[in-house]
Length: 188
Image (cartoon, rainbow, N blue to C red; front, top):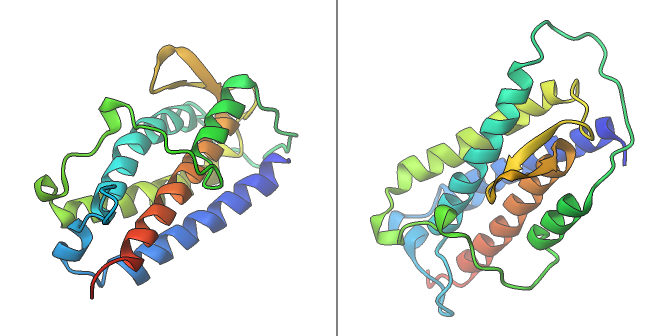
């Protein structure tokens, strides 16, 4: 995969995610957004809050890398993306095609739906996805193979920037699909 093509693809996918939130979730009532599925999984708002908690950390790391760029760049250099074992593992774990249920680490587990304020959770979700989309415009000037960011598991375990960015979008798609399944099961 090439960096510039991947960045463009990821931005298109983020735009679809934002469109889904506006079209599918904004029209729902607070009660609908808080409704848990019959299988006892997360509600729609819990899925979005989980994404807010997880992605805030990684987006902050990306923002820090972009801020270090300094002067305005003129031409991004393309590169073939390379994943290391950490990146491959993290991407595989969060990939929406992976049907295996993985428990969320405690620091990114959402509070119960009843304890969440729907408006701010939705607002923050849209804000974070929009920020990630705009950061991708600048991140293309970084070396996605050489630059690394810490993981939620600690500073001692770092992953390549390209892997982290791809993981963020896949993770969002995974939980958006989960939230859509919850919506489809709502008793209207």
